[in-house]
Image 1 (cartoon, rainbow, N blue to C red):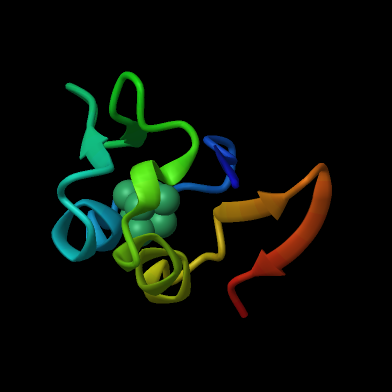
Image 2: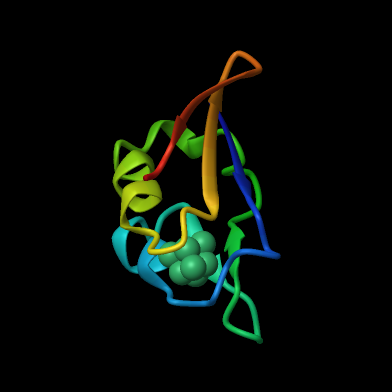
Length: 72
Ligand code: SF4
């Protein structure tokens, strides 16, 4: 799994950090960041939930290089 955040799309709603605080955090400007070392999701089942929770679908989860899930 690989997580990417489109920071051009992110509006800093914070839903990802609220939903999966073990993987996502917010920078000083409120935009989402993946915590260091958690770029692969760290096996956290809440990652997909966080992607779904994002109101602007800024979080993309890829599996084996294929875009497998984009929150809608
Ligand atoms: S939930 Fe989406 S819009 Fe909100 S901080 Fe996370 S990535 Fe950005």
